[in-house]
Length: 265
Ligand SMILES: Nc1ncnc2c1ncn2[C@@H]1O[C@H](COP(=O)(O)OP(=O)(O)OP(=O)(O)O)[C@@H](O)[C@H]1O
Image 1 (cartoon, helix red, strand yellow):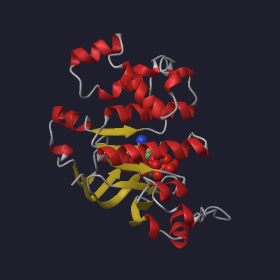
Image 2 (cartoon, protein in one colour):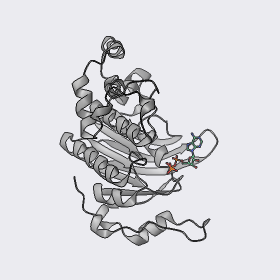
Image 3 (cartoon, helix red, strand yellow):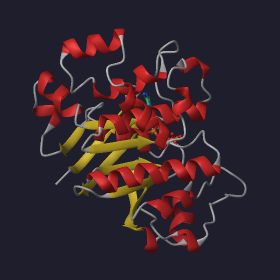
Image 4 (cartoon, helix red, strand yellow):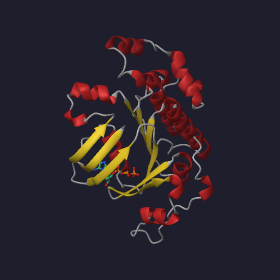
């Protein structure tokens, strides 16, 4: 079993209840997309699963551990087994891409090797290999500040691929990419997960990409799971209910092409 949430609630510092009692079980090797309207709690859920945030109440089990019952050192070791891809990767502006990618293994390397890596990249071929999968090998020695938003997202993904974690979490990983790159990048992520037996959980605004690439879809709304079903069973009525927005005059629920609902990897 990879992860389990029981009655998980999360309130942010300002009192906003981002998650209001989530029960969830995801088995090892599953690929799951989380969809839902803005503010539904998708990022909050992923941060909970990354053990970056502690639930206000309820239980969480990750990779067979109870993260908040561990010492901080043990929790650090658990986090080294989890990769979190951010929508806007927090990479130092002047850092070289090669160093950013290799930093994916900092949690697994000794202090000596980590420090050495800051002075001179210790595995340039490894970084080049992951960047090449994302068509970014030519940026190996560029500074992060020289990259576009979509290129930065791919550096963040290359870093997570290099880390090769057991659990890979991705928060809107392709939001800054054009449709062709987004499609390619999700294929790379899914193929990596399949080949390594990695559990992959990604939040996505592009419903058609979620349906096309992920066998299981979770619809989140107002901090609660509205539906949790195989991609092939998600229908337009469920999507309409998920994205209904009474505040807008004409709610534009996404219309999806059902022919895209075949998982490709
Ligand atoms: N750090 C924070 N402090 C206070 N409130 C927060 C914080 N992060 C998120 N929230 C609130 O928690 C709720 C859920 O936010 P979250 O970012 O998890 O939603 P989301 O589904 O990822 O949204 P989006 O699709 O727009 O990224 C929102 O009401 C948001 O305003």
